[in-house]
Structure formats: C-alpha cells, structure tokens
Length: 219
Image (cartoon, rainbow, N blue to C red; front, side, top):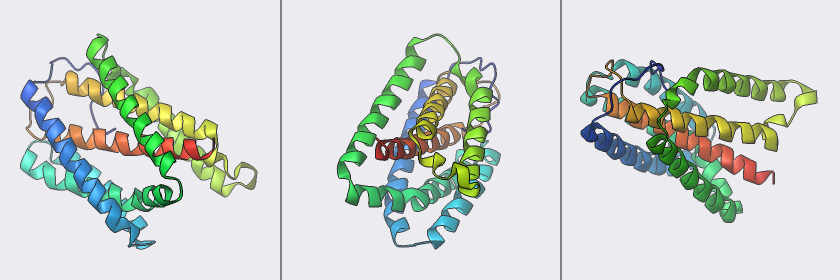
C-alpha cells in the first residue's frame, strides 16, 4: 500500500525481481520479528519511535526506489518501526491467549495464499482496486478516530464489523500488491522496485494480522 502508480501495469515482472522481492520480504519479516521483541521493553516511547520510523521510512523508500542500495536501509527502518510499534500487542496477546495468535497466524497464511493464487490464476489487474481501497482505508481510520473522541461511538473500533472491514481492506491490498508484483509497469525500471514491493507487502501482512487478532478477540 505505497505510492504506486496504480493503473495500467503493462509489463510482466521478471523472475529475478520476483525472487528478489520474496528475499527482501523474508529479511523484513525477520527484522520485524526481532524488533517486536525490543518493542515490548520500550513502553510508551516505542509508540513514537515506531510511528516516526514507519512514516519516515515509507516516504524515503519511495524516493529511493531507483537503487536497491538506497532503498534497502529505509525498508529496514519501516520493518523495525512496525515491529517496535505492534510488538507489545502481539506479545501481550501471545501470553494471554496463545490460541488466538495461532488461529490469526493460520488465517493470515490462508489469506496470503488465496490472494497469491487469485492473482496467479485470474487474468485481471487487481491494482485497479487501489483507489477504492484507499477510500475505504481513509474512512476506516477516520471512523476509528471518531470512536475514541465521541462518547456514543466509543468502542466501535473494537467491534467485529470494524475489524472485519479492516481484514477485507488489507486482503484487498494484498491482491493489489501481488498484482503489481506480477504486472510491473515500465515506470519501475530502477532496481529498488523489489525493495519497495517487499516493504508494501510487509505492511499489508502486518496490518492484516493485527485486524485478525482484534477480530478474534471479539468473537
């Protein structure tokens, strides 16, 4: 869910770029896992460190897409920031309800597999869904903020409906980013594209996992 030019991807991605993207994704997931452990000990400071790293890294990885050597450090920053930010939530849930974490993880693996299969088998460019998903994401964030500010809406952000919508939106973003991995446009000639794609998919996966956790809590 990055600043991709979401329309009319015309050239299939090469096998080498696909392999590089998966390799970077594995690296970022490892960094995220380590950072999530560190995030537990940072307390409230971890919130600000994580947010600054995510937003700053997101901006810079887009700007550095022309070269992998320039984009990679910022992809690492985003991965570490996400781990620091959401690590306490994941580990607290793992301690209090390990079965929920396991079920959410299995659901995540299934969602990623189904999204990948859909993009591989259905001859349609799912990146066309990006504008609609962006509107849905903005509404989701705005509604979540209102639920904390308006007494009558308190707790709506923890409701099954809200979290189910979040699951749908980030599953949709997986379809979009996998489609861009399959159909990479001419505008991404730089060798940093694999880093950008891996970072985008990591963001999708982590957010989807969080919404699955919150959805499971309310069942």
